[in-house]
Length: 328
Image 1: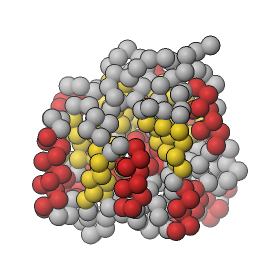
Image 2: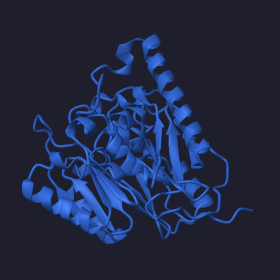
Image 3: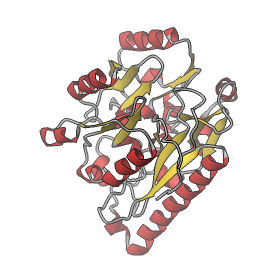
Image 4: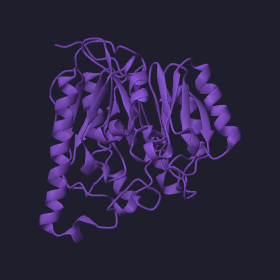
């Protein structure tokens, strides 16, 4: 666990957090429980116990190495990383993706979310929440996980892409984004929900909104062609245009390379960087890169093993939007 006190500084943008929580994986493997509706997964049918101990350990070790290199690159770029370790005792192969089970919000609020997969419910950790309370100003923790027995799920900032400036919650409709819970979250946390339907080339809905779009301070990355209804697509693009951001359209092929799964972060020097995977960065065109880097230079992280689980860099980063407590 990271025992360092967070630096007492404000982010360069309310949209771009200056600190993140990351969880180092222990027994990482593509999760068969999540494969049914996650078209981005590869190798999911092979459970770790069916890989053979040597192969399972090789995959897990590669994931840990990728995680460690990603943390090093983020910290070298001036981003505060609070690292926690998954000890492997609870069979949580997706522990490396903490942004799904909790989110933090200005004003000292933390939300805990109901998860669709039983193994993912075990990722919620009281020690992480208590650590946040000690080092950041936390006034309220709202726990929605009690809705899991009723089959209602809302998988955090995977299911929702939050515009912290316009106070909008962009949500691609799926089994992991219950509309009733979404309305409740938005009413309690002060967002307006914007729901839309998606379909890939095979007609399947996109499982998480954050693989489809990224809201940054000055630009938006979005795979608009995956919004199923022309009317909804036009309305989404209109509202994004009204935000004043540069709208960078991504193709379905680029979305499949995780080009939409990115998070803008603030650095210690007061700048901004766009964290995304090396695979995602390679999928961008030179013109797209130029438009992004007008305000946020790319920070590519190589995580090819972790991406086999169906998530990428943005899924690994739980942004901290809380005020730090003064250091002793």
